Each structure stands twice: as C-alpha cells, then as structure tokens.
Image: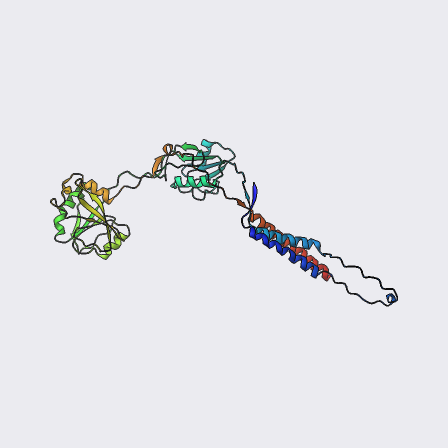
Length: 383
C-alpha cells in the first residue's frame, strides 16, 4: 500500500500557513509604557530585547492544522494497493436469496444482485428485473473487483439476457446453477396476422392471391377488402395498400407508430427513401423490398400474378410471407451450463482509493473547533 498525490500542485497551498503566524504576531497584546515619578531618579538601564512570543497558541495550532488539511484536500491524496480479498457472490435476478444461500452456503461474503449498480442483497432491496444483460454485467463486475477477490455467480439453469459469445473474465468464476422454471416464456410461433386491404380497380385483380394467403392463415376468416377511398378499421392487422396512388398520410402515421404496412409495386416511393431487398424466391427473383424511411413499410417488387411472380403458386408462400411480416424475435434464453465464463482475460487496473471524504470531515471538525476557540478568546477579552 502506498500514498499517491493525484494533484501534487495543491501542496503549494501549504504556503498559506504563514498567514495565521503573521496574524498572531500582529495582534498580540500591546504593552503601553507609563512614566512613574518615583522611577525618574533611577539610573537608566538597557531595555531588554523583545522575544517572539505567540499568544493563544491552541488557537494558532488549530488554524495551522485547518490550513494544512485544506492544502492536503487540494492535493487529493489516495491510497494505492489496498488489498480487498472479501469474496463476492453475484446472484442473477430470478434466483431468490434463499435459493442462492441454499446452493452457495453462507460464507462471510458480499451478496450482490447481478444488475446495474450491483445493489447489495438485503431485506430492503427488492429483486431487480429478471431480464438483465448478463454477459455485459459479468464483464463490468470483473473489471471493478481486485484480481485476488473470489467471485461466485449463481444463475438460473435457463435464463434470458445472454448474447452470442461466452464471457471471458480475468478470474476463474465459481459457477452455480439453480433449477428455476423460466417465467414468461414466449411462444415459438406467432398467431398469423389479419389482412386489411384497400385497392383500386387494378389492385382488385390481385385479391385472389391475398384471399388464398388469408385462408391458409385463418381457415374461416374473410379477407377485409374495400376500395382505396375507404378508411381502415381499427386493430393491429397488417394493412395492405394495392393502389397506384401515394400512401395516405394517415396510413403513414399509423405505420410510424409501429404498424406493418404492405404496398403495391405500383405505389410511388419517395425519391429520398432507401430501399433494401427483403425476400427472394428460390430462383433469386426479388419478391419484397423494405423501404427504409420514417415510417418503415414493405413493398412488393412485382404485380401479384402468377406470370410475374411464380412464387405465388408455391405452397410455402403463406408461411414465408408470415415470416417476413412477423420476424421471430432474436433468441434471448440459453442454457447456463454452456455459457460458463472463460478465464484468461487480462486483469483490469484498480483505481486508487481517495481520502477526500475523511479530509472533508477533518476540515469540518477543525473549523468548528477553531470557531469555538476564537469565540472563547473574545469572551475572555470582554471579561
């Protein structure tokens, strides 16, 4: 352990120690000479030399200590090399503290939630949200701990929040798992969407294929179709615009709020919009493109007819279209056994521990003591 000065130039403030010395010399008690008649016949002798004498030395000492503490506070002293070897046990939310202690035992350790800020596990601290960026939090916790601190991590056997890479830490982690049934597991498949179609006269010729898709998705449902001058009904259905007219502003606003919009190949695209391919058939022909503008919408690349789009006759067309309209979410759950962190990463340098809080407390106490001694001095002068 060694003492560091993060701002050594602050020690120049020690020159201010001369100020209370000069004040005490200038304000010491003055002696006034008075002539006395009986002494005028005495022979004159050399006057004694004056010696430097400080009055109220306790007050002077406190003031010197106060200025010295302020100078040290400006220099920002810190201790480097403090050894912290207390074990840490990090628990991923989803595992209760009772389950964690049953697995890890109760050694004298610091129990932390594996969550942002790493709050201590206690009675007054509620369990954080179960979905956490586990890998990132593990790397952050590893970087904040000294290299010699043992780390135990307790996670559910299947938990969310993992990325695609196994974490690599600077220490070997004691990895414990608890069999906890995953809560809120999302279904692997989506319910097929409902289609609401608005079309012009030419777009009506394309409805036969959309009706077939709708029947494949919903055996008894009827396709909601009307002219392009009819308003869409409320709901979370996929709205299809089969018209050569521009997309209405209200429909664009609806898509901007998260709705899925599918437009005809004849629908004009703004010149500033960016277009990217989204779906090709087995022959490499582009079927669907994504218009990357605010809001985002999808656009057929060709007329919905068997001659211009042979993929319409493919039995997989309804399921493939659903996959484009409702892309599956990225996998977020993983088996904790396969994601046990590796070791071997370089250790992170630990910051020095600053002594500023203790110096601030010392300055405050010295200031109160100085005020008390100064007021006592004035009271004695008045008496």
